[in-house]
Amino acid sequence: MFRKISAALILLWVAFGLVACGGFLPKSNDNRHNQPLSSMTQAGLRNMGSSPGQAMVIRIFKEEKTLEVWKRTNAGAFKLFKTYEICAFSGDLGPKIKEGDRQSPEGFYTITPGLMNPRSNYYLAFNTGFPNKFDRVWGRTGSDLMVHGDCSSRGCYAMTDEGIAEIYALARETFKGGNQSFQLQIFPFRMTAAKLAQQASSQHLSFWKDIKEGYDLFELTKTPPTWDVCERQYIFNAAGGGALNPMGPCPAVTQNAALTRQQQADDIAFAAAVESEAQKAARLAAEAERQAAGEAAAKARGEAIGGFFSGIGNMFGGKDADVVPVISGKPAPRPMPRLPR
Image 1: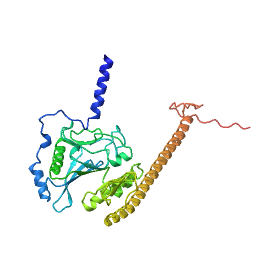
Image 2: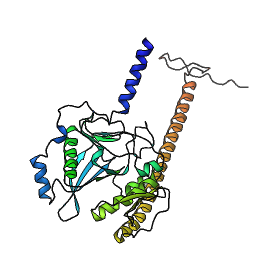
Image 3: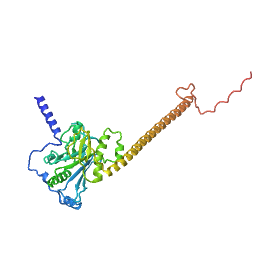
């Protein structure tokens, strides 16, 4: 009986762990998912020339622990509306690879109304859509990777309840405005040449350079790039519009002139930054070597001086001396004259 109860408890614990990010609360009259946007939020949207129903983009930066909401303005370009602090995320820099590794995903994802979770175990949530087309072609596995509230993460991005309530409401109003989806971009850090150079030895460098192109396009155009997967890599703003074979050849892409200039400048900056990082590492190694040599020399000098005084001590009363002088306080006797031979 005890074994049966223990097995049941273990199964219950495993089940809870699997749905910890994406499980549903029992159906209730809780209306938290329909909380209206505050008057302050609506005023902020108006002031930037946008509205609740306009399209949106969310960008996440792991290292900086920030989530950005961008909204399309009446002029057509997207502008940063608000930045939220990420309360917690799991794992280290780098993409999620397999179920149970407690890594939070990185890459480009498309969020549809079906990925919204109004009855999350963690206040409110939306599913990142992991694994996407890119993740699947690389055999990456995982489920219920969410952006949610409650500040607790098992592979998810956890916000405060207040933060996810506003983000959820902004997404809801975007869908109500006629937008079928919004883009979620997740990066390890702000994708500058200097930051990549700091990670030049990382196993994820080629992946980060791949998604950096999408980052650069958004930075340059302030419009979310379309994305697909071919040759097991991301491709942005590909012509044709049809779905690509993730294992098949990539089509020709008309390169953005500004992006080309940006990439060339970044390649130069990356090489210089890598060299600078290598020089810094060499300098630190040389300094450590000099310090170690100095400490060794000081130790040797100390041992030599100690040995010298130990020898003197042996001559005048050391533990191994053959003659032990006696100090009586009396004048020393005058030596006798030498006898003639």
